Length: 240
Image (tube, rainbow, N blue to C red; front, side, top):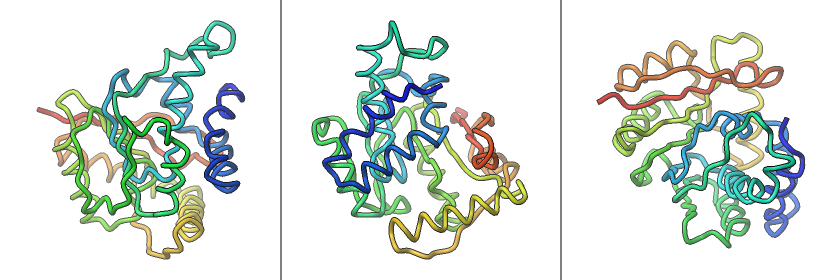
């Protein structure tokens, strides 16, 4: 169970960015299992250089910063006993195409701008810095199949030899749940950016086959239930 106070702490900086940013942060951190999963399973090592593709309004960065500070104050009485200590990243580099989200991220995390940077750009063309962990959460289905492959090739080139890609996708073979996912993602795309481009979805098996072709060793981790049942979190490491 994620401590409610941790969610509130991570969301609080978004008040400065407006009511929408704040309420979006509260809702997303409370209901999306990705954020808790990353902490509960220690998927990001301490001191990691993180590249966050499709970073939105910077929720992952806000979550990690808040978790580290909150753990320091509350570990003895409120931190989930089975969770490892949260990491303190060395740096976070977020890239997103939506100017409003980038501005919200910069406002909310201004106090950490020395090590957390947000760039407004297209992940199909923006420069990728060297990274220990690359996050691509619910973003690759917004580009076509050729771009998906090209982005993953660039991700592999940017990763440290012992680095990891955390790739969350929707399994296109998951029946009605996949159709619900696509409808939700299309709605989010319109609401956040006004764009109405199509979605390019793959099945779990197709994602794994692509990653193998690009010389990643990948495994699937459970990723929620109910509304998130079609989601898959793929953890992939480059093969030497």
